Length: 395
Image (cartoon, rainbow, N blue to C red; front, side, top):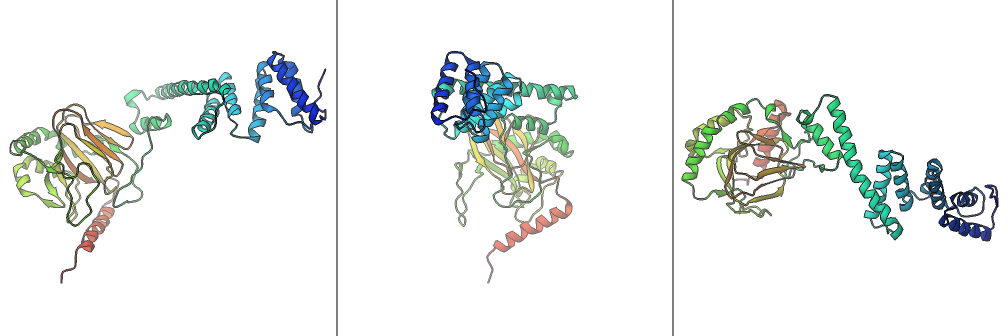
């Protein structure tokens, strides 16, 4: 029997035709099933369209265009139909359209992740989707790398922001933003790390590392235990920090809250002289701030945010055992002998010393290079005014 798309079906006829089409599909009679299902799906047929079954029949016949048309009809009715999304992903993968397959498969997996039930017959297709995405991920990255290489960028020649953008695109890197705990200044670049070559004055400080290491050795010889970096204040709530009052994260200050610690700078004159070339803020009762930051063996500084995004933090490694690193936002970098590390501490950051030896760096803050002299002056006034406002009135 031939079936016309112009047939008007009664409810019983539509139901009988549907059952016959299913029987034909199971028997491998795809063309016969297709004709029945097209009659049911025809406008004004009176039957409920069976787009998914029609897609299966068209697939069995190798008619990709007709299969896609049927699945698109179903997705117009239910844009999150799990079986249709998986079949569309499979169709696009089969026809070498990785980008489209990626989109449909991801939509299907997103549905599952929010609790959509998966029938037993769809489980293999779900696994197929996961395997495709894993492979497509690698193919896409290889394609990008090849294109960059063709454009003249190869490996370490690729700028760090470009490499970071690719990591974000590939899902290997999370997006982080500045979230200073006290003061946010709008318009600052969202950059976790800065590069040494951006600060010409750093070369002089790095050249003095051997002298600074010698002075540090003298300090260590006379110091049994360093002052805890995180300390409770009697007139403030105690910070929620696992290293509160713990010398495992220790400090030896040269400048603290804008005041020079003369005993320490006199003991380390070469370190003091080296710091004079850095653009350190001068803010009454706040800055300069410079110190040895000490991490004892096995110490982990938990993720946290700095107070401001108007500064950068500089680390000069002086004692550097293996297995020590700093994570800022989505990027982790180890310290390297003889090289400064510069970062924005208003991003979430953490550090660790997983060795069995002490790690010591010279830590100090500098103005962000993007700030003009006028902005630095205004910020200095703001911070000093905050300090003045918070002081108790003397009677």
